[in-house]
Length: 220
Image (cartoon, rainbow, N blue to C red; front, side, top):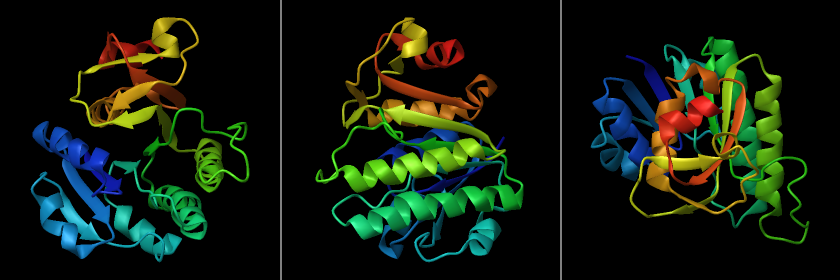
């Protein structure tokens, strides 16, 4: 049994992840901003915690994560407002990373996106640019930490049913282009990473594909 805290607990991926973790016996804490979402989060088996990472400093976040075994960062501003995107997807994420280190919570899974990084290639006049910049900075901060991190790069997210099968470059033994992946599969990948130590200090980009998730992750 692990104690897992999820940031962005009311997101579509998190709402699929919490039942997976709860049903296998993990204790789940889900952090989200809007108190109106508490009941929807609670029915997934998670303990709902209303907190705004945009407002909390590192010390407050460290208190929030203390006592957990792992952090999953799946929060996001949702685009549309560049200032808030930087505040949540970059600055908030960096504070959560620092808080995990301060609290001694070593395992950290970051949900990023396929193609994230300093070479993302998004033009400055593109509306996606603030998000691309924010994720590049947050991912780099996590990789530079001494945490047991995994950075996940799912491709375009869909609402298709989870297949339990993905494609990664490592599993396919070839370069894999960005395609699409169901949010259900992303949730299953996160859950699998939390118990698969071979994913520690790995960046894993993936699509829906032919390979069972556990097998694909071991190949990474």
